[in-house]
Amino acid sequence: MAKKTNDISARPAGFTDTKRVKELVALMEANGLTEIELMEDKSRIVLRRGTSTAAPAAGHMVHAAPTAVHAASAAPAAPQAPAAQPAEGEKLLTIKSPMVGTYYAAPSPDAAPYVSIGSAVDDKSVVCIIEAMKVFNPIPAELSGTIAKVLVTNGQVVEYGQPLFLVKP
Amino acid sequence: MFQRILIANRGEIALRIIRACKELGVETVVVYSEADRNAAYLKLADQAICIGAGPAAESYLNIPRIISAAEVGDVQAIHPGYGFLAENAHFAEVCRDCKIEFIGPSPEAMKTLGSKLASKELAKKCHVPLTPGSAGAITTEEEAVEVARRIGFPVIIKASAGGGGRGMRVAHNEITLRSSIKAAQSEAEAAFKDGTIFIEKFHEEPRHVEVQLLGDKHGHVVHLWERDCTLQRRHQKLVEESPCPVIDQATREELCNSAVRLAKAAGYYSACTCEFIMDKERKFYFLEVNTRIQVEHPVTELVTGLDLIKWQLRIAAGEKLALQQKDIPQNGCAIECRINAEDPERNFAPQPGLLEEFIPPGGPNVRMETHVHQGYRVPPNYDSMIAKLLVHGATRDEAITTMRRALDEFRVGPIKTTIGLHRQIMANQQFRQAKVDTGWIERTYRPKG
Image 1 (cartoon, rainbow over the protein chains, first blue to last red):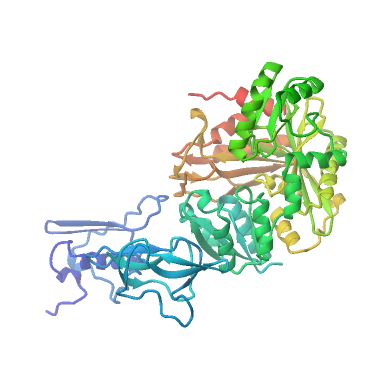
Image 2: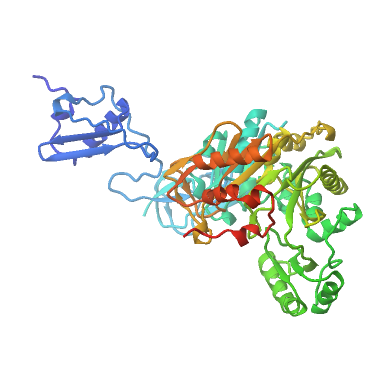
């Protein structure tokens, strides 16, 4: 009997497998479910979706025997992780914009960027320029580490608090 | 008309402006602080830009960040709403320097009418009745006593740069007056960075009546009749209505026309409100001018059928005010109740927090102006007003009946609000007979607990 690779009942037991949980989440989203409860042997998981406090949970309780549950057939698109989501296992720090303006990676159009992936920065290292009201403001890192990711592109409009760089401490 | 404007404000007025812009085909860029990050109205704007942390000084009062947002948002004009930078002449000047239209008066008119002393001088020139008082600023106790002897006690000491009811002290006799002068000067210095004080006759049991004005950049000014805002607590308005229920038409016309004279003399354009105190004999005395659109502007919109925000936009864009005085009606009666997230039973303590339940009223003749909804979290950083409930009726009695019905439907919880207080006011005989004054709420309202 060929095992359907999408049949989550074929997965290892238990819900500590984050991959499995992600599949359940995708299943819920694909089918518009707000609540799902699965029990398997000694494991039980309840997932509730949505943040509205207005309507009580609609309670689409799905007590399905594992074989009846199929993950969405199309490869579920992982929800776009917000830019600041740390990579598995690592805690990255974020350099955020302290002002509203236009982000520039380099001191001038022909110059090299202030930083790139792998650049070491400390408190006072200038990481970029943000132009506001015709004034070019050098932005200090205000933390120490190595640039892990650049989240914005040259010439992009940034708002207060917008993440600019991820830094590995 | 502008292609795109920036709204430098938050909450219900930001939403109000977004709505007017949508109907005029103007794109909107709205700024927000981190405390307002999840506000639903942000999604109704074409663009929303975070300009800072919750505290107003870091966001809604931060001129460089607001101007930056205006530049990156590529707007032609900024609407400042009310409060925050709406009456900040420096901000209006910065806008002008940056070639961004400030949707409001010129900085010059704002400075003239925004100063209590300067506006009073102008009022005098225009034969607008003034409360007797010191001719200008008072610096010594002796000057104060001399004025008080001339005009008679009780007198009130006011800060020239004050507003919103702050920086005022009443003296019923010379002893109190003498001991209050220095204290009043220090308070004014601390609160408004300007220790200038002056003295006026104190009107007992006064009513607060104000006139809505609109002027264009071509010198045309009209009034949109008056509003009675007598019901206040600690000088914060709670209920407003139009028309004023206790004056005759002759007084009304005299009142409104005097306000028009003042605005014209100041070269004022855009919207403003001329405030008066009315005494027991229904004589009115000029108080001050608010050089901005006000919270209670929808009261006027309901009786005149005009959209004040749209007119502000048109005026700022240079259009002529196509309204003739004789064509501006005052139909029926409109009443507004300000719904604040405050607990009247605990001395009106502010009530930030989650609105688990928010079911606003509806139906005929009811107008709700609010940015909040069920699930909204009221932030602690700003003033406590969460909604304006307005009604319109053919008569004042009908309007009150509709307001009572609407307040009965209104469900907000678990945080406390002033809805219960408004229910009491609307049921009260003195209010229904319009036998109230500005101190009435504080004298009459007693928490039930």
